[in-house]
Length: 331
Image (tube, rainbow, N blue to C red; front, side):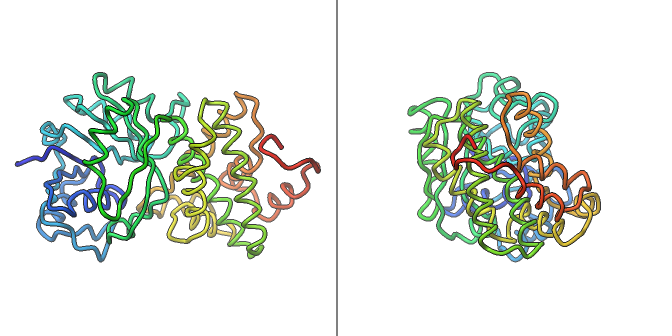
């Protein structure tokens, strides 16, 4: 098949939305889907009804289920679930010039960030991270948003990539902090589950705001321990993404938490979901990493307990009963 110089790996909602955004100026974009049936549907109907319904896809998007068809792409956006990134990269038969990581999570077992996974497997590629407050359906519709593009190759890579992905309504900002861009996106998914629980329990907007603020303190603690910069976490890929994901049922993680707060079981909710609530898989990895580093992350611990089947109301009471202390990122 004819391929383009830019491709997207992963045809879920976010991957499809990014392909749509990239194709909005008439550019050819190759989109890899795990399912051959899904790839065929995208090519024939110019739609992805499974993951991004009611969006007419650009005719310049060409979908494939064959990773070999991505060989012509100098730049790949990796939008697989975080826990599948290593496996998919291993199957790629070549190393593209630029890998832009768009998955948000920490690898189970190894505690590696996605950029570390990519560096270990896709040797020869330069790594960048794209993160920020982005709901897929809004990006696909061309609504305005701004994101962080953290470039491991520094300003030279930024000069190469920023004009490739920038669009009138999709504005990237430069960073050299890969760790900060990744940890913000990973932690906010876990915190969004907690905020959804608050909504499901009908605890009010005061409680939700307090949880976001204390969750941000947790993000700062673990981020700094891993070498992230405070300014990064205070920006689009940290605070910006946190506010968006923790305040809307358009967030898969928030919706999962809301259902947990309403008494549904984690096992049934995760089994029924076509799309991945990454926070459910990141939470135990993040908890274990924080324990290893000696960092207190009580909200993350509470989310893990919920996912293990503990009662939401009891966990909320436990958080409120923690010792009184001064406010701050170390509290």
